[in-house]
Length: 110
Length: 120
Image: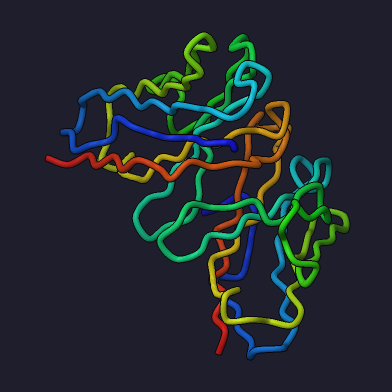
């Protein structure tokens, strides 16, 4: 059971907008920023979004992030086939003094 | 270019020990916190341990506390994970990850991982 809660799956057709939620608590998302990682099939995770809504260089602006209270969300607009991957949210947890991850959301582009 | 290359994985029996290494290049290694994150087959990511840039501060997940030890050799730009009393549930791909700055900053670079299999 992961500390952060994500839906196990999400899907959309090319061009659509999809959103992936991430729910936590006051000791993690409620008091620290949220990061998102993308893991393409058979590869290592890659930083997709940091500090709730900041995109690293090279990440398309189709990807956006937000946070409110103890929840966060990753949105992907103009869905493309290459976006098919697993997406993980993560945050530092002050009570555990360590990182906590969501269980991951498998995004399927139909 | 930042590069992280893990090594040391393999097949071991329950109760055995294993030492993972992560060779880093392309950045000022001693200035950045480093972490180990693992992924069991078909499962999600699980944080294992983090060490500060100087090595003076470490933290562990409850699942490995007392069994695993994280360390770093800043003279050799290398991160280590000493794993003792291994259990079947420790089977996973182990990734090393570089922090943006401090222990509580996001992981901006990841290695390709090394597979640890614990089985009798």
